[in-house]
Image 1 (cartoon, rainbow, N blue to C red):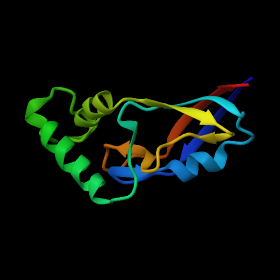
Image 2: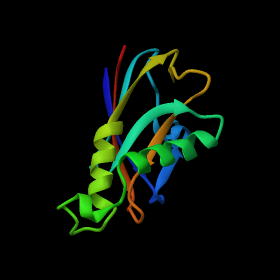
Image 3: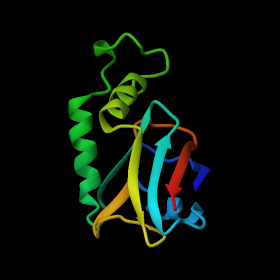
Image 4: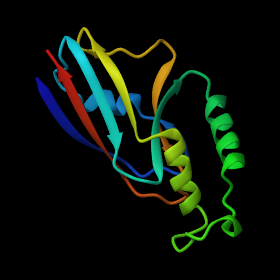
Length: 137
């Protein structure tokens, strides 16, 4: 069995946004066992799994990645779309564009403190499109 879904997440400001519930809400009839692969179809945002309980994790993500890849136009030649564009591309490559999660008993098998994050690296990004592929039996 293979199912595929297209999800649109609303525009969000720069930051690390928990989207677990929004993703789960759209997934219908998950198999008893399988794999769920989620890919973001953009080059200036990313997806990751991480701690979902303490909101200071999001602050630390922002602080770390903004120091690692600053919005400094003197560092880049690709600046036509704004000072946050090339840093966003680099951050999305570092974080990654997809997550793969086991499906167990018809649910995403996330750890107790794990959540799915949309990592938005642009100040004024639009809605973000996700392709979700579920393979199972």
